[in-house]
Length: 164
Image 1: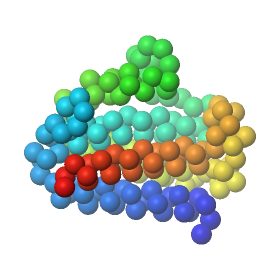
Image 2: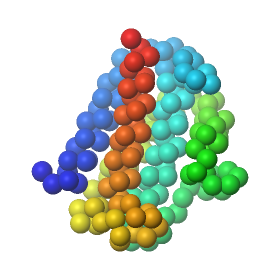
Image 3: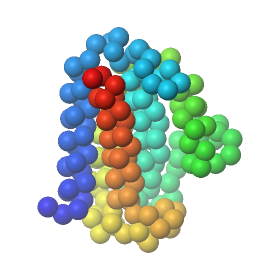
């Protein structure tokens, strides 16, 4: 199995793990505050969706061999949204907290599937090339995927630990 196939297989497995976990929970378990700042599992998934949109922009740019076009809502954030993750996370919470669970889940799952689909279209040599896309500042598109995987995994582990 090549590196691209390995990364995408791990991400598909992670999606399955998330879906199985979420399907096993009640609406109350999903929407009740249980984490720092009163976040619920729903808020965690909305947070993952927000960062996922940034990864999608990067992977779309890599697939099209152009500069990324980030979501327009990033312009609402003062300063450097990437350097000030706490501010960005707070924005996600403020703007997504009131959405219905079904909308948050749909947005997150569609985004996850889109990220996988876009990534499939990138040749492995380009996916692993840390120099081709200068706007990634020395990182490869594969790094974006692995970072997305790691981010989702970090939250998956926190969610499962909180349920025990």
